[in-house]
Length: 218
Image 1 (cartoon, rainbow, N blue to C red):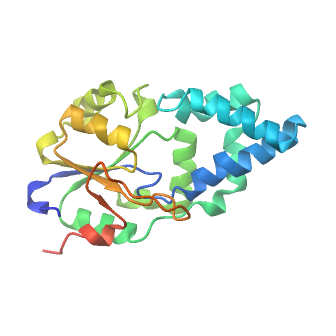
Image 2: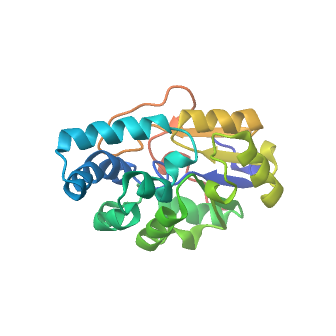
């Protein structure tokens, strides 16, 4: 599927790509509504309705990913609530081997995520995958989400990568669309970003796990 001799730079999403999206889905769909209902003394159905309505309005924007924004909007400490369920943060299968193989082959490996720095810090603390990464970029550094062309322009200005020799892997179609529009040549999706939910990506070539594209050792 991939000719590694044609690729110098590998950009990887975090949630749903390197890490199991189950943590994030569980937090936003289950844990946060329960804790919001307790903190604000409302019933769970009302909490679900409010959160679903509020969150949907901002989908795909930088605010959607911003823990500080949601802490203020919902009057809860989102970062602290995430700490309560951090045991659910899990690396997806074969990630460690894949990242180490990329480094062994001399590829530049970038984590490129929309995750807020507070969330990013927690996940690096739990998983320690940063030991295998050359660069870690949160879109909040550029004040633009990966859905925006400005994000990719800022990223290229900083990292000087060649889009023609770059592979980008992400689990979200609209973000892959944005990378494609920018001109990144090699794009790959993830079929089942949440280990607890079946899903197939049809819009882009996609894998279930990284053993399907594991670089050989020279």
